[in-house]
Length: 336
Picture: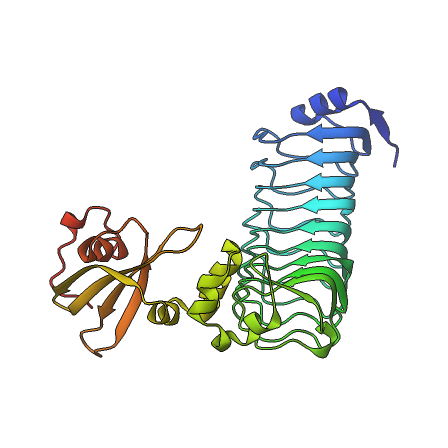
């Protein structure tokens, strides 16, 4: 196919008018961010850097599109052409209607943050860096694929139950908030760090022995990760690192921590559900931990519910829990 080489200004004008010819080549950066009037692109367009962020009127990409770097953030695309070529980086962040990607997609860095309609990744996918942050409906990796020694960020993939067995080596792996991921591939090696914050993992495969562990970006030991029952309130209160102290308290559980830490009582009252107590624990170089102790009227079980540190009374804390900023507006007949 014949090609036409144009400068960035010339190409931009033709593209916005919808008059650009097929086979157009542009060496440089075409930035159409938030251009709502951009509806189509010509077939077999070649451009070094193409930014189409927020181009909500663009419903499809043309066949034969070839870029070094392509950014499609906040667009309304549901799929991509099968012959799309992106050499370096493809950014599809916040494309909340994207449902599928082309088989055999090969790109250096693939960013899919908050693509909430995406349920599976394409067969034959080949990337070095993969960002799946917030892909809450993603359930499966392809049967065959490759992530080559780079980084996999699957933070917040709530429906992901497993990583693929072909994933054998990455530099960085973040699976924090993957609340259904109970095991990792047996031959997986992570050379830099592994973040397992708020996952149900109870152990790691032998291949990950000695890996640098993190919990929501805070470096931790295997004991903190997998033996939280050994953590005491005394240990947590004695920890000088504020972020690590927060992790220790989280791993213990706020109820257990408050029970052991001898809090002092800010307020006490009675409501239709029974006795309530507002408890406070001061933490070094951090905001205090304040919790409302309540009793379930049907089971008699006691609960501790953390509330903002500014709470001063049980009524104020109960109103905040119920969603009321003004305690005077909170008038329950009975607590449930």
